[in-house]
Length: 214
Image (cartoon, rainbow, N blue to C red):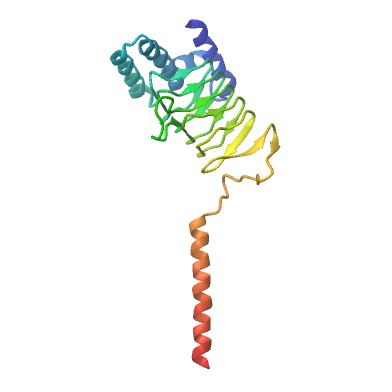
């Protein structure tokens, strides 16, 4: 347990430029606390101490803002950056060396039984606000862009973007249908539709005026 904790602290120091020293990470970072609570809750879950497992899990949730079901399986050196609003479901699995940002959900769709939540491979990054929903796998070394909604399997070494998410890059090479993704200057489809309606009304008004003059 101590070795795992030391590995986790070092992982934060490597991946979070705001981390100043190991004591700050160990005592002040909510992601570290959330995983420590989960390790204890998961042990109780595996030993059929369900009430105790849930109680420890809820204590961690109230202290950190990160909700991890006791049944979830988490690998080593998980880094949770900020962490507020993260939800990880009962049958979710997370591999080693993953990085998860705040607002992420590893959840289900309500259509499955048994295995209901995703399996996240090793060295996966999941961006802020992303939702990964369903009993499929996100392959090793993949990247899920912020606010994406992933509803199907993502191959290893891939980058997925959008709602629903699609793979735009694989092994560093753009997929054929992929286009440049600008997450800042995204067009508003509602505004575009209103502009088209406004244009059509103007054309109709011009035609009516021409008819009246005749």
